[in-house]
Length: 401
Image (cartoon, rainbow, N blue to C red; front, top):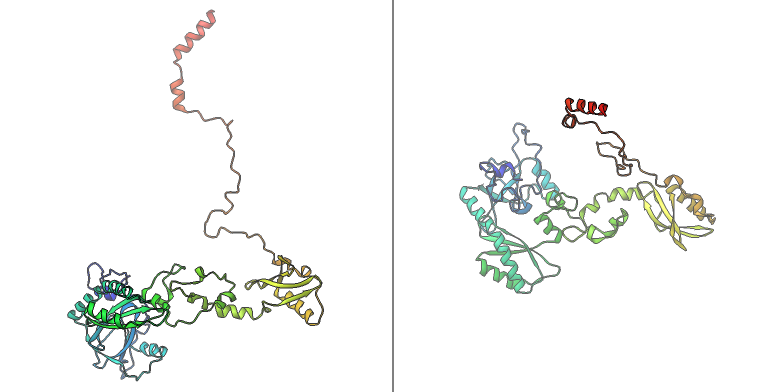
């Protein structure tokens, strides 16, 4: 999975920076990448390239930096950027005119004061950066032990070292506010480094760590999703999904972000439906709605005193019955309006892609004809055939008798 930029110049294809052989556990090669579709286009004469570039750090963390020195930078270059204190090391993820689009998307002014790029990273910078990356995993495990020893209700989810190894940022999640002043002192004494604590939400934690969702693909939050909108249970109700928290919750423990993807389409389709809480007055009693099929525009009703017996009606029929109720005219019975065409018909599956017949197990087996004569084996006939002289002697003996 390593990109060509970080694996170039190596014989075995291992990335230079993270040494994870393309697993992207710390190198974040494929997280929140942007395709530069203007890379093969040159600028008009007399126009200078945009002096701001986007730099990517660990686990998809990105920031904008200004190129004051007018260095020739391209996507994939490892650069040393300004930080407080010291400097940080990152990889350029986007350069050129598309940076303006990204800045506008993230609501950053084009003339804002940004940190600058010092230089292209030297081999010494890369060596220090790779050594700092190797320390992150043991430091994270030890940091969790120190937090548990202080009985703090927090979880250290990730640790990120600065490129020069002078500072470490500890990302944590917590339900309530945590007093970690003593924890910072323990971290500074244990690791002999400058410590910064940063709280992230549960969705941000899942986006940093990454993973595979129930759909079989990588998590949206760790690949392309940047804005985390709130997801309510009403989104599942509008889409007629069962309110099962085990199926609706993602790896972050919250409702899945994909519940909002098709919500607008369902809301537009439900505008032509009557209210789900509508009741139809009939001579046999009041009928209430039990189920809705948005795709087929069908609604199921049942009497209040007979909730087990459902009757399927089309949306047009329900509206017709409601119009009669508005005129204080009760409907005779909902059985008279049952949509006969809405009944489920047997599905006829077709062998479209060369699959076997679905009813192959229902076909009767062919009976074996046991009375069928077997074909003679020529080898057996030759072995069992008697010599011709013996046959003649037997016939002659029978004649004498």
